[in-house]
Image (cartoon, rainbow, N blue to C red; front, top):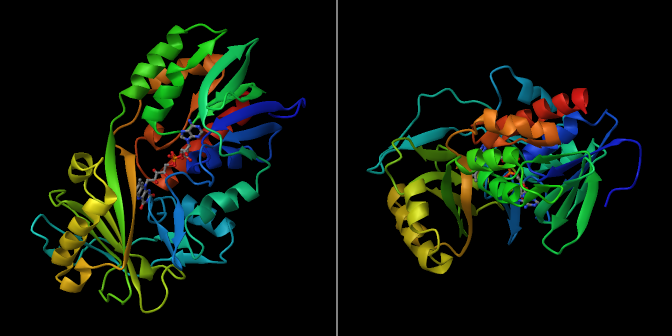
Amino acid sequence: MSEETDNVQLCIIGAGVAGVGIADALSESAIDVTFIEKSRGVGGRAATRRKNGCRYEHGANYIKNDPAGNTKQLIESLGEGGLVDIDEPIWTFDADGDIQESDRQEDHKWTWKQGITQFSKRILARTHATVEQPVRAQSLNQANGRWTVTDTDDAEYGPFDAVVFTPPAPQTATLLAETTVGGEEDDRLVAAHSAVEGVSYRSVRTFILHYPFAIDRDYYAIVNRDKAHSIGWLARESCKDDHVPEGEELLVVQMGNDWSEAHYDEPREELAPVVAEMVAKLLDDDALTEPDWVDEQGWRYAQPEDSVTMDAIEPLTEIGLYAAGDWVVGHGRAHKAYWNGVELGEQLSATL
Ligand SMILES: Cc1cc2nc3c(=O)[nH]c(=O)nc-3n(C[C@H](O)[C@H](O)[C@H](O)COP(=O)(O)OP(=O)(O)OC[C@H]3O[C@@H](n4cnc5c(N)ncnc54)[C@H](O)[C@@H]3O)c2cc1C
Protein backbone atom coordinates (compact mmCIF):
# COMPACT_ATOMS: atom_id res chain seq x y z
CA MET A 1 0.00 0.00 0.00
CA SER A 2 2.66 2.39 -1.11
CA GLU A 3 2.09 6.13 -1.20
CA GLU A 4 1.82 7.84 -4.60
CA THR A 5 5.10 9.55 -5.57
CA ASP A 6 6.87 10.15 -8.88
CA ASN A 7 9.51 7.63 -7.94
CA VAL A 8 9.61 4.24 -9.61
CA GLN A 9 7.89 1.74 -7.32
CA LEU A 10 9.60 -1.63 -6.88
CA CYS A 11 8.20 -4.55 -4.93
CA ILE A 12 10.52 -7.26 -3.64
CA ILE A 13 8.78 -10.43 -2.52
CA GLY A 14 10.93 -11.83 0.30
CA ALA A 15 13.25 -9.99 2.71
CA GLY A 16 15.99 -12.63 2.70
CA VAL A 17 19.59 -11.72 1.94
CA ALA A 18 19.02 -11.56 -1.85
CA GLY A 19 16.17 -9.07 -1.42
CA VAL A 20 18.26 -7.09 1.04
CA GLY A 21 21.09 -6.97 -1.55
CA ILE A 22 18.71 -5.47 -4.12
CA ALA A 23 17.57 -2.77 -1.67
CA ASP A 24 21.19 -2.06 -0.71
CA ALA A 25 22.16 -1.47 -4.34
CA LEU A 26 19.15 0.85 -4.78
CA SER A 27 19.59 2.85 -1.58
CA GLU A 28 20.95 5.91 -3.44
CA SER A 29 18.50 5.67 -6.35
CA ALA A 30 15.10 7.24 -6.98
CA ILE A 31 13.45 3.84 -6.76
CA ASP A 32 11.15 3.22 -3.80
CA VAL A 33 11.44 -0.32 -2.49
CA THR A 34 8.62 -2.14 -0.70
CA PHE A 35 9.25 -5.63 0.66
CA ILE A 36 6.45 -8.12 1.09
CA GLU A 37 7.68 -10.67 3.63
CA LYS A 38 5.67 -13.58 4.96
CA SER A 39 7.49 -13.98 8.27
CA ARG A 40 7.87 -11.59 11.20
CA GLY A 41 11.64 -11.30 10.85
CA VAL A 42 14.05 -10.55 8.02
CA GLY A 43 16.96 -12.60 6.69
CA GLY A 44 14.99 -15.62 5.41
CA ARG A 45 17.13 -18.75 5.72
CA ALA A 46 19.93 -16.73 7.35
CA ALA A 47 17.97 -16.54 10.60
CA THR A 48 18.46 -16.60 14.36
CA ARG A 49 16.24 -17.95 17.11
CA ARG A 50 16.31 -17.23 20.87
CA LYS A 51 15.27 -19.67 23.56
CA ASN A 52 16.09 -20.27 27.25
CA GLY A 53 18.94 -17.73 27.28
CA CYS A 54 20.52 -19.13 24.09
CA ARG A 55 20.77 -17.71 20.59
CA TYR A 56 21.30 -20.01 17.66
CA GLU A 57 21.36 -20.04 13.88
CA HIS A 58 18.93 -22.74 12.74
CA GLY A 59 19.50 -22.06 9.00
CA ALA A 60 22.74 -20.61 7.63
CA ASN A 61 25.46 -21.00 10.27
CA TYR A 62 27.73 -18.15 9.24
CA ILE A 63 28.71 -15.97 6.29
CA LYS A 64 31.82 -16.72 4.28
CA ASN A 65 34.12 -14.45 2.34
CA ASP A 66 34.45 -14.57 -1.44
CA PRO A 67 37.79 -14.87 -3.30
CA ALA A 68 37.80 -11.17 -4.24
CA GLY A 69 37.24 -10.12 -0.63
CA ASN A 70 34.09 -8.10 -1.42
CA THR A 71 32.13 -9.75 1.38
CA LYS A 72 34.88 -8.86 3.87
CA GLN A 73 34.58 -5.21 2.86
CA LEU A 74 30.81 -5.40 3.09
CA ILE A 75 30.92 -6.95 6.57
CA GLU A 76 33.37 -4.25 7.72
CA SER A 77 31.05 -1.56 6.32
CA LEU A 78 28.29 -2.82 8.64
CA GLY A 79 30.25 -1.85 11.76
CA GLU A 80 32.39 -4.22 13.78
CA GLY A 81 30.29 -3.97 16.96
CA GLY A 82 29.13 -7.45 17.88
CA LEU A 83 30.88 -9.09 14.91
CA VAL A 84 31.95 -12.69 15.54
CA ASP A 85 34.53 -14.52 13.42
CA ILE A 86 34.49 -18.12 14.61
CA ASP A 87 38.10 -19.16 15.38
CA GLU A 88 37.73 -22.89 15.87
CA PRO A 89 38.12 -25.04 12.71
CA ILE A 90 35.74 -27.31 10.83
CA TRP A 91 36.73 -30.98 10.79
CA THR A 92 35.21 -33.84 8.80
CA PHE A 93 33.65 -37.24 9.44
CA ASP A 94 32.73 -40.16 7.22
CA ALA A 95 29.99 -42.78 6.94
CA ASP A 96 31.56 -44.75 9.83
CA GLY A 97 31.60 -41.69 12.07
CA ASP A 98 35.38 -41.42 11.94
CA ILE A 99 36.22 -37.77 12.78
CA GLN A 100 39.32 -36.32 11.10
CA GLU A 101 41.13 -33.03 11.42
CA SER A 102 40.70 -31.22 8.10
CA ASP A 103 43.66 -30.00 6.08
CA ARG A 104 41.51 -27.41 4.31
CA GLN A 105 42.56 -23.84 4.88
CA GLU A 106 40.27 -22.10 7.33
CA ASP A 107 38.48 -18.99 6.13
CA HIS A 108 36.41 -16.35 7.89
CA LYS A 109 33.15 -17.61 9.42
CA TRP A 110 31.14 -14.53 10.32
CA THR A 111 28.07 -14.03 12.42
CA TRP A 112 27.15 -11.52 15.13
CA LYS A 113 26.73 -11.76 18.90
CA GLN A 114 23.06 -10.86 18.35
CA GLY A 115 22.83 -13.47 15.58
CA ILE A 116 23.20 -13.77 11.82
CA THR A 117 19.98 -11.77 11.25
CA GLN A 118 22.18 -8.74 11.96
CA PHE A 119 23.47 -9.08 8.40
CA SER A 120 20.05 -8.27 6.92
CA LYS A 121 18.99 -5.90 9.70
CA ARG A 122 22.11 -3.73 9.41
CA ILE A 123 21.90 -3.55 5.63
CA LEU A 124 18.18 -2.73 5.68
CA ALA A 125 18.81 0.03 8.22
CA ARG A 126 20.95 1.89 5.66
CA THR A 127 18.25 1.70 2.96
CA HIS A 128 14.91 3.52 2.72
CA ALA A 129 12.99 0.33 2.05
CA THR A 130 9.59 -0.35 3.61
CA VAL A 131 8.93 -3.87 4.88
CA GLU A 132 5.31 -5.08 4.90
CA GLN A 133 5.17 -8.08 7.23
CA PRO A 134 3.92 -10.60 8.02
CA VAL A 135 2.32 -10.57 4.56
CA ARG A 136 2.29 -13.67 2.35
CA ALA A 137 2.02 -12.84 -1.36
CA GLN A 138 -0.44 -15.10 -3.12
CA SER A 139 -1.09 -13.70 -6.58
CA LEU A 140 -0.05 -10.89 -8.91
CA ASN A 141 -1.80 -9.11 -11.74
CA GLN A 142 -0.59 -6.47 -14.14
CA ALA A 143 -3.06 -3.83 -15.31
CA ASN A 144 -2.14 -0.74 -17.35
CA GLY A 145 1.53 -1.72 -17.09
CA ARG A 146 1.60 -1.76 -13.29
CA TRP A 147 1.54 -4.66 -10.84
CA THR A 148 -0.72 -5.35 -7.89
CA VAL A 149 0.25 -8.02 -5.38
CA THR A 150 -2.55 -9.70 -3.43
CA ASP A 151 -1.84 -11.48 -0.16
CA THR A 152 -3.47 -14.49 1.47
CA ASP A 153 -5.95 -12.19 3.28
CA ASP A 154 -6.97 -10.61 -0.06
CA ALA A 155 -5.27 -7.31 0.80
CA GLU A 156 -3.73 -5.57 -2.23
CA TYR A 157 -0.31 -3.91 -2.43
CA GLY A 158 0.85 -1.59 -5.19
CA PRO A 159 0.69 -0.44 -7.87
CA PHE A 160 4.32 -1.29 -8.62
CA ASP A 161 6.31 -0.68 -11.79
CA ALA A 162 8.30 -3.86 -11.27
CA VAL A 163 8.35 -6.88 -8.97
CA VAL A 164 11.25 -9.14 -7.96
CA PHE A 165 10.66 -12.70 -6.78
CA THR A 166 13.19 -13.95 -4.21
CA PRO A 167 11.48 -16.92 -2.46
CA PRO A 168 13.09 -20.34 -3.09
CA ALA A 169 12.35 -21.56 -6.64
CA PRO A 170 9.40 -23.88 -5.78
CA GLN A 171 7.69 -21.04 -3.86
CA THR A 172 8.40 -18.61 -6.70
CA ALA A 173 6.93 -21.18 -9.12
CA THR A 174 3.73 -21.26 -7.05
CA LEU A 175 3.52 -17.45 -7.30
CA LEU A 176 4.23 -17.48 -11.05
CA ALA A 177 1.32 -19.90 -11.48
CA GLU A 178 -0.88 -17.25 -9.85
CA THR A 179 0.44 -14.33 -11.93
CA THR A 180 -1.60 -12.82 -14.75
CA VAL A 181 -1.32 -9.96 -17.21
CA GLY A 182 -4.65 -8.16 -17.51
CA GLY A 183 -6.24 -11.13 -15.75
CA GLU A 184 -4.97 -13.51 -18.48
CA GLU A 185 -2.30 -16.20 -18.67
CA ASP A 186 0.90 -15.15 -20.50
CA ASP A 187 3.21 -17.47 -22.48
CA ARG A 188 6.30 -15.93 -20.87
CA LEU A 189 4.92 -16.71 -17.44
CA VAL A 190 4.10 -20.28 -18.42
CA ALA A 191 7.65 -20.87 -19.73
CA ALA A 192 9.23 -19.26 -16.67
CA HIS A 193 7.02 -21.30 -14.34
CA SER A 194 8.16 -24.56 -15.86
CA ALA A 195 11.87 -23.59 -15.68
CA VAL A 196 11.65 -22.33 -12.08
CA GLU A 197 9.68 -25.40 -10.98
CA GLY A 198 12.51 -27.58 -12.31
CA VAL A 199 15.17 -26.31 -9.87
CA SER A 200 15.91 -29.08 -7.35
CA TYR A 201 16.71 -28.61 -3.67
CA ARG A 202 18.32 -30.42 -0.74
CA SER A 203 16.07 -30.77 2.30
CA VAL A 204 17.46 -30.41 5.82
CA ARG A 205 15.89 -31.05 9.19
CA THR A 206 17.88 -29.10 11.76
CA PHE A 207 17.79 -30.35 15.35
CA ILE A 208 18.92 -28.14 18.20
CA LEU A 209 20.12 -30.10 21.23
CA HIS A 210 20.87 -28.20 24.43
CA TYR A 211 22.98 -29.56 27.28
CA PRO A 212 23.41 -28.03 30.76
CA PHE A 213 27.14 -28.80 30.59
CA ALA A 214 30.06 -27.81 28.37
CA ILE A 215 31.25 -30.07 25.55
CA ASP A 216 34.92 -29.45 24.86
CA ARG A 217 36.24 -30.30 21.43
CA ASP A 218 39.03 -28.89 19.25
CA TYR A 219 36.63 -27.99 16.45
CA TYR A 220 33.66 -25.67 15.96
CA ALA A 221 31.89 -28.09 13.61
CA ILE A 222 32.22 -31.36 11.77
CA VAL A 223 30.91 -31.97 8.27
CA ASN A 224 30.16 -35.29 6.63
CA ARG A 225 32.35 -35.20 3.52
CA ASP A 226 31.17 -38.46 1.88
CA LYS A 227 27.49 -37.58 2.41
CA ALA A 228 26.88 -41.15 3.52
CA HIS A 229 26.13 -40.51 7.22
CA SER A 230 22.60 -39.65 8.44
CA ILE A 231 24.02 -36.51 10.05
CA GLY A 232 25.29 -33.95 7.53
CA TRP A 233 26.68 -31.29 9.88
CA LEU A 234 27.13 -30.82 13.60
CA ALA A 235 28.21 -27.51 15.16
CA ARG A 236 28.95 -26.22 18.66
CA GLU A 237 27.09 -22.93 19.00
CA SER A 238 29.18 -22.11 22.11
CA CYS A 239 31.99 -21.14 19.70
CA LYS A 240 29.94 -18.04 18.77
CA ASP A 241 30.25 -15.26 21.38
CA ASP A 242 27.07 -14.52 23.33
CA HIS A 243 25.14 -17.46 21.89
CA VAL A 244 25.30 -19.97 24.76
CA PRO A 245 25.76 -19.24 28.49
CA GLU A 246 29.07 -20.32 30.03
CA GLY A 247 29.14 -23.97 31.09
CA GLU A 248 26.39 -25.03 28.65
CA GLU A 249 26.40 -26.33 25.06
CA LEU A 250 23.97 -26.13 22.21
CA LEU A 251 24.54 -28.43 19.25
CA VAL A 252 23.13 -27.54 15.83
CA VAL A 253 22.64 -30.85 14.05
CA GLN A 254 21.70 -30.69 10.38
CA MET A 255 20.54 -34.03 9.10
CA GLY A 256 21.64 -35.15 5.62
CA ASN A 257 19.35 -34.83 2.60
CA ASP A 258 18.35 -38.52 2.37
CA TRP A 259 17.56 -38.80 6.08
CA SER A 260 15.74 -35.45 6.08
CA GLU A 261 13.56 -36.41 3.12
CA ALA A 262 12.79 -39.86 4.55
CA HIS A 263 11.74 -38.40 7.92
CA TYR A 264 10.46 -35.00 6.82
CA ASP A 265 6.90 -35.39 8.14
CA GLU A 266 7.66 -37.33 11.31
CA PRO A 267 7.07 -35.50 14.61
CA ARG A 268 10.00 -33.82 16.31
CA GLU A 269 9.25 -35.54 19.65
CA GLU A 270 9.75 -38.97 18.06
CA LEU A 271 12.87 -38.05 16.13
CA ALA A 272 14.78 -35.97 18.69
CA PRO A 273 15.78 -39.00 20.86
CA VAL A 274 16.89 -40.86 17.70
CA VAL A 275 19.02 -37.89 16.64
CA ALA A 276 20.47 -37.52 20.16
CA GLU A 277 21.48 -41.22 20.06
CA MET A 278 23.26 -40.67 16.75
CA VAL A 279 25.02 -37.58 18.11
CA ALA A 280 26.15 -39.46 21.24
CA LYS A 281 27.56 -42.23 19.06
CA LEU A 282 29.29 -39.83 16.67
CA LEU A 283 30.87 -37.81 19.51
CA ASP A 284 31.45 -40.96 21.58
CA ASP A 285 29.78 -39.58 24.71
CA ASP A 286 26.74 -41.34 26.26
CA ALA A 287 25.78 -38.20 28.20
CA LEU A 288 24.70 -36.66 24.89
CA THR A 289 21.72 -39.03 24.57
CA GLU A 290 19.84 -36.76 26.98
CA PRO A 291 19.68 -33.10 26.00
CA ASP A 292 17.66 -31.08 28.53
CA TRP A 293 15.72 -29.33 25.76
CA VAL A 294 15.46 -29.55 22.01
CA ASP A 295 14.22 -27.45 19.14
CA GLU A 296 13.85 -28.22 15.47
CA GLN A 297 13.35 -26.62 12.06
CA GLY A 298 12.51 -28.32 8.79
CA TRP A 299 13.88 -26.71 5.64
CA ARG A 300 12.11 -28.36 2.71
CA TYR A 301 14.03 -26.04 0.37
CA ALA A 302 17.32 -25.71 2.20
CA GLN A 303 19.82 -25.22 -0.61
CA PRO A 304 19.43 -25.41 -4.40
CA GLU A 305 21.30 -28.16 -6.22
CA ASP A 306 21.34 -26.28 -9.52
CA SER A 307 20.34 -22.94 -11.00
CA VAL A 308 17.41 -21.82 -13.12
CA THR A 309 17.76 -21.57 -16.89
CA MET A 310 18.03 -17.82 -17.36
CA ASP A 311 16.72 -18.02 -20.94
CA ALA A 312 13.31 -18.88 -19.53
CA ILE A 313 13.12 -16.09 -16.98
CA GLU A 314 14.77 -13.24 -18.88
CA PRO A 315 11.67 -12.62 -21.09
CA LEU A 316 9.79 -11.71 -17.88
CA THR A 317 11.76 -8.46 -17.72
CA GLU A 318 9.63 -7.26 -20.67
CA ILE A 319 6.66 -7.17 -18.29
CA GLY A 320 8.60 -5.84 -15.28
CA LEU A 321 9.21 -9.13 -13.45
CA TYR A 322 12.61 -10.24 -12.13
CA ALA A 323 14.10 -12.93 -9.90
CA ALA A 324 17.05 -13.10 -7.51
CA GLY A 325 18.34 -15.53 -4.92
CA ASP A 326 20.60 -18.50 -4.40
CA TRP A 327 18.67 -20.53 -7.00
CA VAL A 328 19.35 -17.87 -9.63
CA VAL A 329 23.08 -17.96 -8.96
CA GLY A 330 23.05 -21.73 -8.33
CA HIS A 331 24.84 -21.79 -4.95
CA GLY A 332 23.17 -22.20 -1.55
CA ARG A 333 25.32 -19.58 0.17
CA ALA A 334 24.14 -16.40 1.84
CA HIS A 335 26.88 -14.18 0.41
CA LYS A 336 26.21 -15.48 -3.11
CA ALA A 337 22.50 -14.70 -2.73
CA TYR A 338 23.32 -11.20 -1.44
CA TRP A 339 25.66 -10.42 -4.35
CA ASN A 340 23.12 -11.79 -6.81
CA GLY A 341 20.65 -9.30 -5.33
CA VAL A 342 23.19 -6.46 -5.61
CA GLU A 343 23.82 -7.32 -9.26
CA LEU A 344 20.10 -7.21 -10.02
CA GLY A 345 19.69 -3.99 -8.02
CA GLU A 346 22.42 -2.32 -10.08
CA GLN A 347 20.73 -3.52 -13.28
CA LEU A 348 17.36 -2.14 -12.11
CA SER A 349 18.94 1.16 -11.12
CA ALA A 350 20.25 1.53 -14.68
CA THR A 351 17.10 0.38 -16.49
CA LEU A 352 13.94 1.26 -14.52
C1 LIG B 1 20.08 -25.51 7.08
C2 LIG B 1 20.79 -24.49 6.21
C3 LIG B 1 22.15 -24.24 6.40
C4 LIG B 1 22.80 -23.30 5.62
N1 LIG B 1 24.12 -23.01 5.90
C5 LIG B 1 24.70 -21.97 5.27
C6 LIG B 1 25.94 -21.47 5.71
O1 LIG B 1 26.50 -21.94 6.71
N2 LIG B 1 26.50 -20.44 5.03
C7 LIG B 1 25.87 -19.85 3.96
O2 LIG B 1 26.41 -18.91 3.38
N3 LIG B 1 24.66 -20.28 3.54
C8 LIG B 1 24.05 -21.31 4.18
N4 LIG B 1 22.79 -21.70 3.82
C9 LIG B 1 22.18 -21.12 2.62
C10 LIG B 1 21.66 -19.70 2.82
O3 LIG B 1 20.87 -19.63 3.99
C11 LIG B 1 20.84 -19.32 1.61
O4 LIG B 1 21.56 -19.57 0.43
C12 LIG B 1 20.45 -17.85 1.61
O5 LIG B 1 20.00 -17.45 2.88
C13 LIG B 1 19.37 -17.65 0.55
O6 LIG B 1 18.90 -16.31 0.59
P1 LIG B 1 17.71 -15.86 -0.38
O7 LIG B 1 17.44 -14.44 -0.09
O8 LIG B 1 18.04 -16.29 -1.77
O9 LIG B 1 16.44 -16.76 0.04
P2 LIG B 1 15.63 -16.83 1.42
O10 LIG B 1 16.53 -16.63 2.56
O11 LIG B 1 14.85 -18.09 1.36
O12 LIG B 1 14.67 -15.56 1.35
C14 LIG B 1 13.40 -15.62 0.73
C15 LIG B 1 12.41 -14.85 1.58
O13 LIG B 1 11.14 -14.91 0.92
C16 LIG B 1 10.13 -15.03 1.90
N5 LIG B 1 8.94 -15.58 1.22
C17 LIG B 1 8.78 -16.81 0.67
N6 LIG B 1 7.56 -16.92 0.10
C18 LIG B 1 6.94 -15.72 0.29
C19 LIG B 1 5.65 -15.21 -0.06
N7 LIG B 1 4.75 -15.94 -0.76
N8 LIG B 1 5.33 -13.95 0.31
C20 LIG B 1 6.21 -13.18 1.01
N9 LIG B 1 7.46 -13.62 1.38
C21 LIG B 1 7.81 -14.87 1.01
C22 LIG B 1 10.75 -15.95 2.95
O14 LIG B 1 10.11 -15.83 4.20
C23 LIG B 1 12.20 -15.45 2.97
O15 LIG B 1 12.38 -14.43 3.94
C24 LIG B 1 22.10 -22.62 4.59
C25 LIG B 1 20.73 -22.86 4.42
C26 LIG B 1 20.08 -23.77 5.23
C27 LIG B 1 18.60 -23.97 5.08
